[in-house]
Image (cartoon, rainbow, N blue to C red; front, top):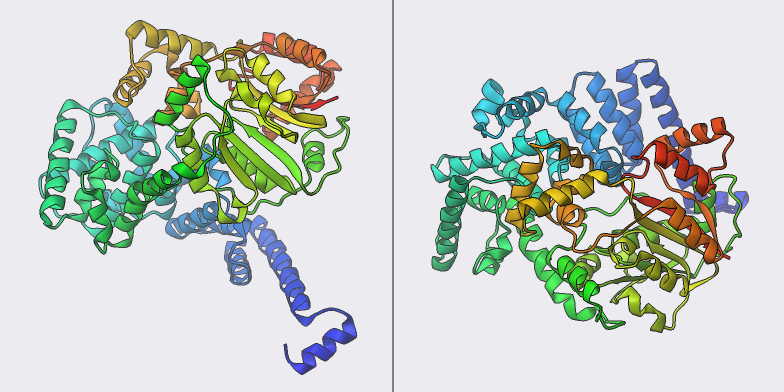
Length: 584
């Protein structure tokens, strides 16, 4: 700031730097309003210029990136549109979870050859089409460099069967090319690395054939031999091998770290060697708060040691922390509850934190949150600790513990999240009761419990699995998935958990699943002096149920009314009951 600016700042009682920031903010708001108005008037060229000017001032404006993607799509510029949509998802990764189906529909609209390939492979399955048959004259290169496709593959398991089958066929086609020594252009190497990352993310849930397994075995031997002898390894050999098995499973895998690889391969090595190595190093940094002696607890622990759940990829972006009271008022407008009044030192317990996604989200969204995150599984906790952003690490403590032993710890909490754990206990109500003992008077609890009524297809699938004696090994899960798809129980694909190995095991092969009814929940709430605040739904469902309850003259906090709704509409809580209570 020069002397003139300092004098002006003193006159106006405000630092010049602050005024410049405020001025830039005003300009961003003005440009955004101008761009939206132009877009609504279908003046797409003007809208594009306004959004581009805005992004020069504020490159991390996620909504402007998304809107500019929409404008570029309207202008017939699919590659530019894909790049801006991908950028919006980099800035706000949570949109992938919230709007997955819409994002995939946009991708197919931007890449007609991809939509054609999905349809062709769906018609041919279980026969795998070669890439030339999938894409015909357009060729795989028509989609291989699409930014939105590449981002999607590296960020979340694909969640629909047609997409999965097309990628399964593409993987085999690329394996065959490598086995036949075909030259691979760089653009396909980069695509191959993205597909390999997808396979690692979903834990190799895609189906394989016996011939395919034999080809992979030969490729693995060739790569291992080259590592042992110091011979060169073609990048596409590594990419294809990583589509079938994690690179850290190779003997002498650490030798790959010494080679100066191009960025796509180096990123693959980070995902499959450097990050798993870091998780192993974190094992001894996680304290143990209680012993784990209960038989069911030990069986659940073993499952999650083998399959940490879920394997999430990105932390939510641009989250504005707010007081817990405000969060609940926004979630349940008009619902009465006693305010905590805490904007700092909010003590939060995440019971059954798994791989840390809920712990990280709690630290992000609740103002002043200090989180203790507990789980049975060290593998899950190591994953959680590695994924926790440095900016949040000081506010989250991870520890190993069993809920059944938590009465012994000398801690009390303002809020407890138990949205992923009680239904995996022999007696969920006992676990709930133990956690209530750790909750301060006036504290809040967020719970998730499986519905007896809402999981009929899951129960049917578990019966099918028992009758056909599928085991919970990765190969058993792959076989089971394909057979389920040929039955009426294929409705199970409505669960996103179906599309990765650890999540499918959690959904269909869990060693302990308990389900409850709304009357049981209501009785427990009454017996333990709790106030029911309401069920959690997405915005669309909230509006639907609000209209339904208003029409009937019911209260949204009346559990008898909710029981009547679920009795009539058995899929109301098909995922689980997600709800909040306050301790009296």
